[in-house]
Image (cartoon, rainbow, N blue to C red; front, side, top):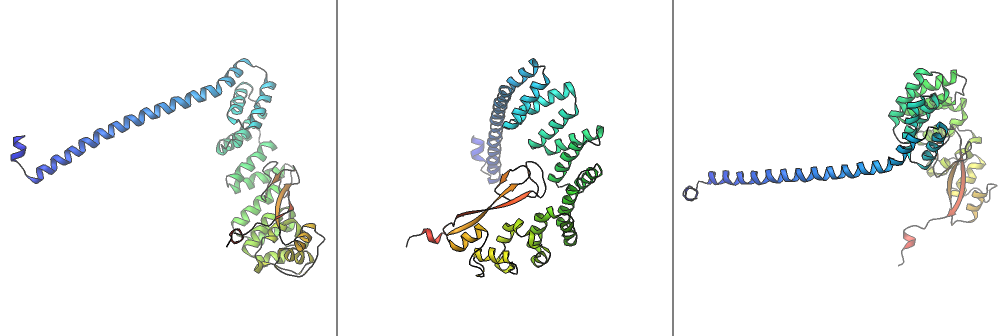
Length: 325
């Protein structure tokens, strides 16, 4: 200590100070790492216990039950309830024991529902190595490629399905998605003429990118099929050279060309300004209902099955109307 007092060199004092800070920081770091490791081990122990508790019943069931039919029914029940982990455990057990194509397909499809798209895709590709003409596997694989944005691969699968005798709508739909991605309006108009069911994706794109071209090629008979798209067009993009268009845009308040309409929703809007028009979308194939438009039904995978239903609601008050001055 006497030595330190006698040697009051500022540089020496600075070295001592920095050394003390380093020692304190080192031990603080070691303590924090140890604490973090204990917390991690504790969490892992907790989750391991949770997983074991969750799967204890299903593991016991798999050990005791040799009935394929009973296990399939149970797996379907778990799938419907959204308990994909237990359903996958059952199908994996059945796959190891029976190794049948239908079980493999169900397992691959279940992986897709659970969000493991890459795993599902790989399993479908493996199935097709042994059963290259299986239509169910091909349809599922096409949907997976489409979801993952592998449109060229999806197109190739669509061509195979068409060669197997299925409709060319799947292939045309993928071609439309590619044409939209590449801004190929000429190809889109050709697809619209050949496949009217592709109306919605094609004209949703055209009205967004080139509304003049869209009006030039849209057939009047298709107006009602995309009434929601026409309804939401800004005023500067509308056209009123058809009775239906005069009614819809008079009902919206863009123009004042008609006083009544044969369409109930438009007629009500013309006579009741406090009403508002909203839309609901129904799949004509499986009758599923959605609050949003779709190109391909997420339930049954049908293309061009989106039917628009007009719903009258009370007009929402603006923020200014909610204030009291």
